[in-house]
Amino acid sequence: MADWLTDATDAGVLVIDPTQYTSDGDAYTVEGVSRPPATGKPVLDSLNPAQYQIGSPSVTLHCLGSGFDRECIIAFAGVPERTDFHDDTDISTLIDSRYWTSPDTVEVRVVNPARGGSQLLDFAIVP
Image 1 (cartoon, rainbow, N blue to C red):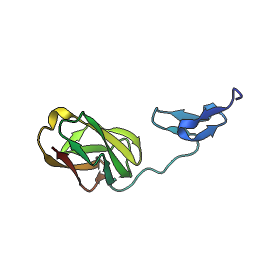
Image 2 (image 1 turned 90 degrees about the vertical axis):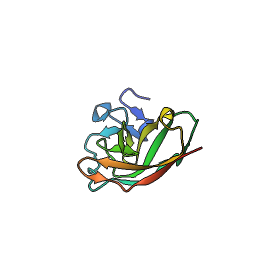
Image 3 (image 1 turned 30 degrees about the vertical axis):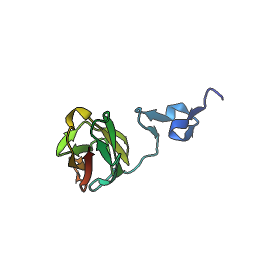
């Protein structure tokens, strides 16, 4: 491959001039190309995994939907959690096994402080 070609296969693009893109570690931004910012409340469609079994190791919970941005926070059982942004359809947080020792059903919501919160989805803690 020529020196002036950059193959950004993780992003699924081929960039001819490497000075025309930037990366923040999560996504590539090609100069002159942008998505419009999300408007309205985030939409939470599903949780992956859908439940947590007591005694299992800690697990990453992915909230899947639309309209997510870096300002979105996952509220798990009413508590704002450290949230990792993957893309505008996927954000995640850690379900820490130390805190869940008995069955429960907790509500999960994605909140953007400026745009409001998604609908609630139930997350089951099962024996």
